Length: 138
Length: 246
Image (cartoon, rainbow over all chains, first blue to last red; front, side, top):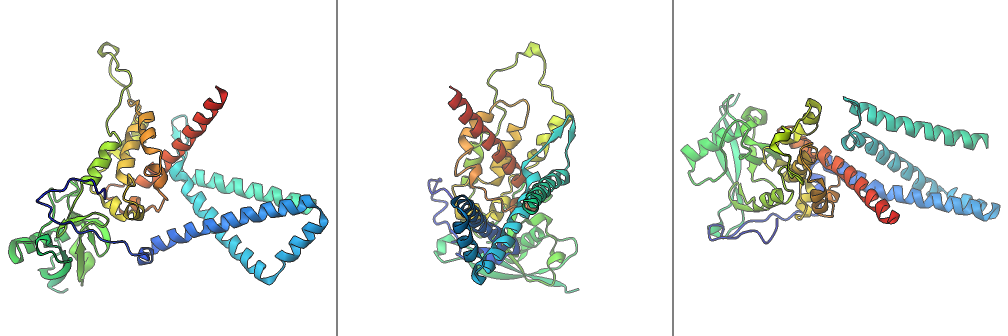
């Protein structure tokens, strides 16, 4: 509420409710929302990990082996499995939201929401398949 | 089925200077009664000091929005039977200052509505001799859902972002801005974008989505804001490219 709002004799004292710090545990949808926001940390972590992998590859076999040894540690495996699940949750909810933002028209026909989300999933699948093929073939 | 149901109504009497407290009222549980009917019964027969807003009693005016068992809802559309055996907890709309009992202060919302310029803006007026502004059914369909908003403010009560950041323009006002942006007669897109593409406008929305869930008119403000964000991002890229090419 804007504090500069009009204040008159007829409103001698407004009551303002304070939002508790754990406001989000009151409802399931808010918990899911906060969980989704938290998965952004896993997305950032994955991006940093990708940069580190690229840098290790560029630096030579020794740096790459050293990084791989570090990532083979049980604690790192647990962290990476957790990060993978979090990123998957983030990606799926992101793709499910995409029809909300994108309204695509082909002439007079509006592309249904399901097709927009489906297109995103298809692109995700194709790109992942190409990367997997390149890795296995290489 | 029980004959009565208990309503726990939040009472706030500013002249007493005390904190709000819940007061219990026993009302008849009738199949055709909604929560608003129960409040009217209390006002007429039990406690005439109870204050709340209402008008049309048929989901059109948007005056009787309250928190019922923690959910923002139009009390004229909330049947008592749905909450049986009770009790039913009735509170003023969340995130707004309370003036008295179930009456909230709504100046902030009204000011925000005004800020989004919810009217058709024309840069150049069409001459009368040029005929009317034409609109195809598809063009109308693009923005018509957003015209259904009844300003009931339920979406503001459902939005945790508005609760945490009161400066946020909010779902209904942004959906209304989008209603005019998508209207092919309007030319005020740039003006609105300048006012709303900021931290208190479209970019404050973190897409919780509850605004659309609670909307009694299926307006989908969350969708409107996401579309607005996409337009805002495209606008930013366009301005970046045009600036570089100069």
